Image (cartoon, rainbow, N blue to C red):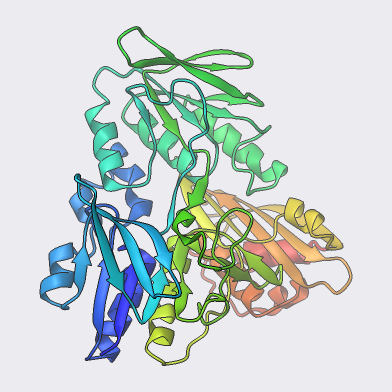
Length: 445
């Protein structure tokens, strides 16, 4: 009997566990989850605030009892791992409120411990009303804390910040977004971010760009009342800190497992680390970027589920490889869909790719239809050989379809001229005779 231990009970960890269950009838599987909930859709959390998702229970794919009773997994909750002894093949930690020590031995170990929100060391982050967004309990705390809130500050203009700003605005809260850079959504290029700024202003969201947070101030009762920046005071009885994430990998110190300078575990295509018997997958691990041709760290649920499945197969001796990512992401921001894949102009420049860009404003369907909507498309391509490097699409409708075409093209190393030859679906209610990405490709110099 092989002993499998998995640290982390969410996307990557339980995807791996299910592969082991289905393919190794003699497996002894122990999963160690620091929280109390297994297998939930983290990406759906902001939409509970706005009401698009009725309650957090709807985000749980399988509860812990299902893993225990139906699949025979020793699925433990409130088990925090503190260190791994790679020589003895043991995992050590504490469990419960009493922090009772535990030790679990393994033959094969998967690190699927995810990431946690990065909370800067600002004075006042301990005040009531200051929140992060990562777990179901986080959302419960926010909803319980909304009574009487008229103004909220969202610190950070990335994915989580934008989604939380939208959903707080949906329930009538005045929202102020504070971003230390000169624009929101730095994963998009500056010319594309302008559309995001317009949308924010159209929905009454205050933008505080190029501002550094200095502290969070107390109203005298222990509750936050404002955010102090280097340019003034922002009123807020509720603060969402969305300033990035940090891998949960401190417990690997001393194991010899190789990590990036930011703490993500380096893995090969088989999800193996450099230490025999230890695998890693999901948000705490690296992903090979097919366009950059090097390891990257882009923590998303899509990668976590794929990497977890592949890790589980390799742990049972059924070889499978992770084919890599191309950097695809999408989110809704009020009436706009924001989508990107591959390299932005800024990333191409940072990697010293010789590149050109082409931008086009089109419509999501045939332009003569009354319900057509503007669609903004930007393509980044290699100026030497024309290879497609990336794309960004923003509009009210149709961005999702186009970004998936571009992601597929990137995966298969197509060049910008190949886009013009694609046999894409056409009928006036669905598209123009030339798809917007083809129209954009045709504008190449």
